[in-house]
Amino acid sequence: MLSWIYPPKCVSCSTILPPTNNAEIFFCEHCKPLFSPIEPPFCPRCGLPSTATCLSCLGKRKIFMERHRAAFIYDGVVQELIREMKFRSRKRAAYGLGHLLAVVCASWGIDGDYIVPVPLHPSKLRKRGYNQAAVLATPIAKQLKITHAPHMLKRIRKTPPQSGLTPSAREQNLVNAFAFNAKKYNVENKKIFLVDDIFTTGSTMNACAQMLINHGASRVEAISLSIVVKNE
Image (cartoon, rainbow, N blue to C red):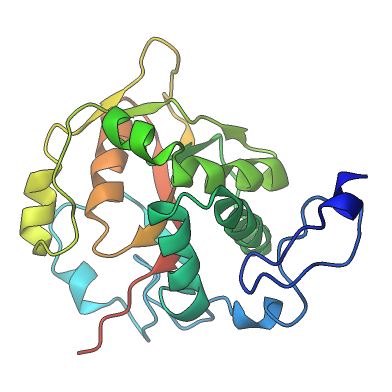
């Protein structure tokens, strides 16, 4: 009934959507084609569009993630909506993007024991009102029937923003930034998928993966809504 009185709008262009009982429709027919998933070839380690393992991955010494895949390139409408959900608290944009990501993940045929969003520091969580990675992870867990564990990892140290830092500075910035919730979870011999919104160098996800491996996880893979492609 509410959808008739207050009709939902397209998350991207704000066009009023047709009346429906399906609360999981977030985009109009015009905007749906704007989201084009990344197709092969891509780096088998980080998912960056490439014909082989990219130079960035070849140069890394310690990678705790088995692999990473992103659904979209960080540009255009994807970039705009990510900025909206992170800096303007548009939670519905996060829901819409999460459902798009879940559909793409289902096409990959992935399976595991836990879906774990990259955590925010409590101060940033209070400011934003929600963890966008946890919102993105919710429909993935539902679609794939994998346990969602939004409190498995905690961000215990407030760090400066990663943007603008060199790859080595990003890694140093995250030393001792995360903790594992051993009171609630046992990940011995478990396969875990980390989820985040943007993949740039992978430093944040790698730090989270290291924490999970150190507590017994047998395999950690990572999923991002988008990946940054740098123009050389």
